[in-house]
Amino acid sequence: MVRLNYVVAQLPNPLFQAFFNAGVEAGYNKTPDVNGFRQEGFGPFDSQVHNGRRVSASRAYLHPAMKRKNLDVQNTCIRY
Image (tube, rainbow, N blue to C red; front, side):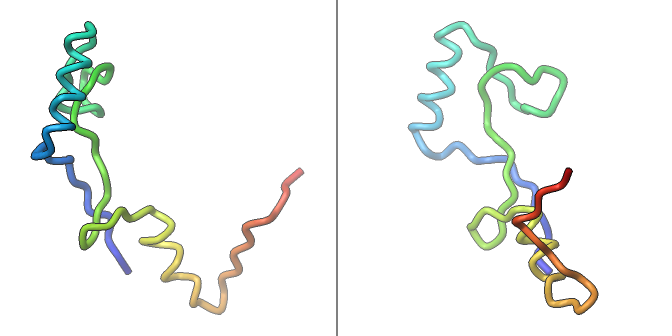
């Protein structure tokens, strides 16, 4: 099973920094934590990464469990 590793994006890329600075110049807030007190604005985003690749909750928890005999996953279901 792959754990969801919560990381905040690093800003070594000058394009990231230019994007955030452009938002501030346009009058938007710069926020260091988009899940914190002030959520509106520009800032580094959070992501779940394992070995340099994005990991979803499905990939981390559901895919390993699909080998179980007592689990049947249907992705084309319509519920009324």
